[in-house]
Image (tube, rainbow, N blue to C red; front, top):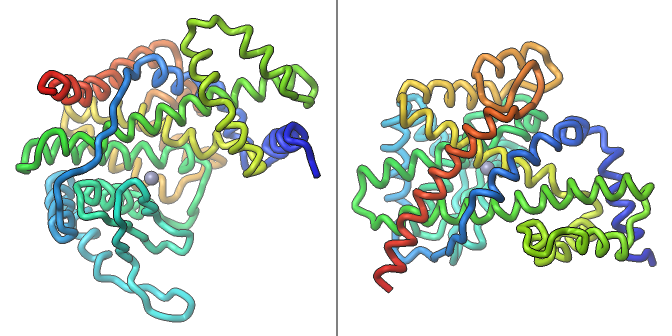
Length: 352
Ligand SMILES: [Zn+2]
């Protein structure tokens, strides 16, 4: 049987040699900058559970009205997809399948490889967020089901939609403000863990190279002990390293390529949200991104040009790149989202 650290070194080696991760590895330094924005600007967030019952039909109505408000075409595509069938395994089946679950915590909603949509619903406000999130993915689903650029940016569009749905619910529904903001609180909290993991794996890769592919417990402990004891990084690595390492060893692969899409997603969604709040016509750029994600790949020069036209603050000179000015801009946008959910948490603590 292989030792723990042999498995870890092999997992890192396999990741480094994975052709499909060429761009993920090439741009990891840039993604770490975005992860740092999250680590530096997130305060302690308390996650609450949903308490209000929302029947599935109500959530579908909410999403229909929300899509109508931001983009009429999305509303009609949404209603059409709900009724449409496609051929799976030789049989005509619904494209969208709903599955009742007991708690949003075990949600596994997704667009599957065959293009069908699986929605777990819990009869809470989480359902409206899930449905609009997954349908936004579906709107981008075209021939390249998992292009590199989509892996980088796919969650930017869906998370922007979630942020816009929160605004819509706050304005147009009678639901409790706390209840409406649970989704974003949970998102920011989960992404904080993704950001920590991305920075951890980035460090792991650095140590792996410095030690010629032979990491062991001593090397990792020495590194940990070299960090200032009162630093955030020490605290984060101290509490989470074991869990991240176990995950890598059991899966045989580093996890940053999956986790980084939420890191990029939340930061860019904060940026889109801020831009749309200031100028409503900016939402057309969001729709453009949803559209082109369906048929671009980072290998195509034309597609990169199409992205550059969007002027999003992470693409520069045909590369994924975050310059210092944009870090500042993105940090400000991200802080607004954190403050948005903290506002409710502060009020609650006040009452309690
Ligand atoms: Zn998603």
